[in-house]
Image 1 (cartoon, rainbow, N blue to C red):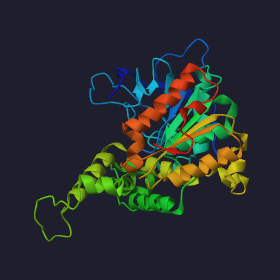
Image 2 (cartoon, helix red, strand yellow; image 1 turned 30 degrees about the vertical axis):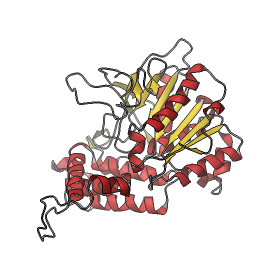
Image 3 (cartoon, rainbow, N blue to C red; image 1 turned 120 degrees about the vertical axis):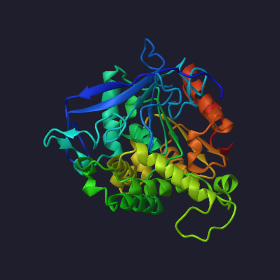
Image 4 (cartoon, helix red, strand yellow; image 1 turned 90 degrees about the horizontal axis):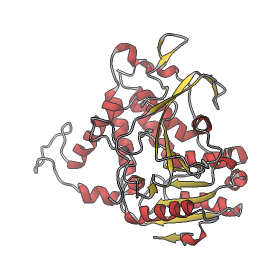
Length: 390
């Protein structure tokens, strides 16, 4: 891995007394958001990059926590001194979204109206709501315009929403492995995962905290379903193939027979130990709801008409959950509006998870783009990425 770690980091908690008007019509507040920052904000306050997190991630982007040497941030391979998003040049901001289970106000926190955990009563949140909350943090940091907003997958949707709804408050939008909305197939995967959770006897209608239990069985299955969609068939074949766990058939329908089964159960067990079931329901529904073209008669080009940022859109050839075709829809809508857009379609074998990994071509694209931003160029056209598979 090129570059250095940001070292030990500590989160901050931002308290907001003024309620946030949610897309559902609910005025939610007071609330708290957990935030981490890396690097230094320059004197002009124009070198800040907001990084938006995906489904099971958080504000903890890079570095480690004191006394926890194995606590690297989820995008540690990308963010740090000398890394593609260089914290010697940029001030990087990570914000844990409202409704999450990693510090920001969420379903496990106390509802002041009842004195009990919110549970299933926590209001439904959308990508719009998260971006509105993030904008408040950015404003409190004294930043009028972000150098960029970066995100992958669900984080990429948030980056796009920033460009659409706060067009004058970011210079660059970097959307990785994302889509302008979920396909019916993707919504279906999310619904099956949610059903696994809500039908777990330990779910108790979302108020399982009061019963001292966790719907781990449902969480395990939900994670297994999701994890299958994050990997490509080639990666699964290379890692596991049809290898048997014990080397011989056990002739059982209950126990693990294949290595891939063992891997999925391990991922499910690990996930159920740290993730909140109500948070999973909220975040997958936010994914389902994101559809900026909906308010413009289904016309994505019209939705992007208000955008002013320059764009980098990147996809991965083996990502079948957020396929390159979906990224090209975004690129076309941007070009229809004569916006400045660079597009990279990267031939990587890893599937959707590629945006989290250290592929040299992928990191090379991001490094070049951020170097151009740091150098103060007016346009990234010299990147030679437009429409090119790399």
